[in-house]
Image (tube, rainbow, N blue to C red; front, side, top):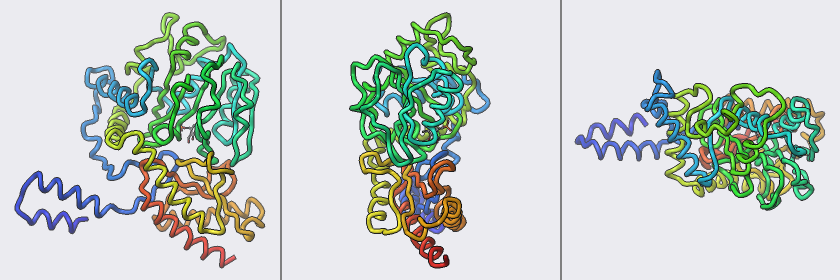
Length: 405
Ligand SMILES: Cc1ncc(COP(=O)(O)O)c(C=O)c1O
């Protein structure tokens, strides 16, 4: 890269030409990106720290400049995700967890609750509804790799679910199982789905996600979408339990709409806001369908490799529920399957460790509570060429390690 830049600088100076050539040099010399973490996820291609140079650091988030940047983060998100005009979108502290907890604590209670559980984060939501809110929910469960029977959901209840199970690599197949005339609210954690999978907003009442996932933003800031049905619930219902300030969305008995115009409950990081604006700019240029396609292209690289590889399979039991963002793989070779679970986990961790050490793929271990295996983040910020490089190395290291057994 340095060599390429030098060559250009030696030519006659022309600012526009230089800019254009540098872009080309960057494109042609992009280094391998080894970041496959499922959160915080990889930054967009060619991201540099100088993307933050216009950050309103040291300025109040309530100043005209601060407010304008936060409002832009909200309006650009709504535009890119095609969120209907009559839905509200606000920024909450505590990342996806903060936004989703604020929703559960503010909206749940007046109806029965159903929670769909098929991996670690949905399990966490079920625990909170049961043990913290003490709402005695109906829990529909499936093991890692599967999904509960979506047709068994009682829509007389409020229904809590994840759109994509980040720790099992299993997503909901579509939104048709949510009836248009539901009585309860659909309460969706879409943190590893937003910007990478289709969301049918007509089936969503409450939805949360965070900046750190599909767009590779920074952690600690969550977003919450509320439909008109959710707003009607909020106007007519006050939960019987105390609500911490960071969960409170009502003022003088009515929804505090200013939160959703960017008047955040507490202070956001203006550095993270700037970074999110940079991510949105990149995403806006690609478009929603383009973002989906980027993620699907990454999944396709893994699918092609799994197809021709006899020792590995997707954890997801079928293609329709296979995630295109958090792609979870399980090792199926007899030698590995015969190991006790702990030994298997240790063996696979050694392989992931070797890829980490060689700077080819970081953070590809399966989630701590998930079955031992590998997990590659394949969201829109990832490039197929990087997935290909990582898989080639995985194949090499696996063959090496298995032959040493
Ligand atoms: C499905 C799901 N829900 C919630 C979270 C928690 O997200 P955050 O750490 O941004 O609050 C994650 C993080 O990976 C997730 O995958």
